[in-house]
Length: 66
Image (cartoon, rainbow, N blue to C red):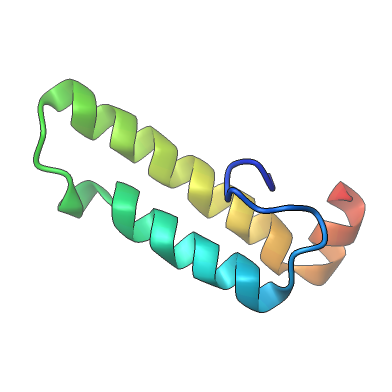
């Protein structure tokens, strides 16, 4: 999950949130006006970013993951 958010395991909650927001905006389906293939890839990446942030932003889920 850290790799998806382009972070290291010791990242703080604020750093994770900043990385999540940056990547979510970058890959959000509404922000992508490319071809169908590009939009599908952006949607997939957006879901990966969302799931990774969900795990890492929850203290107990993050502890289990780490």
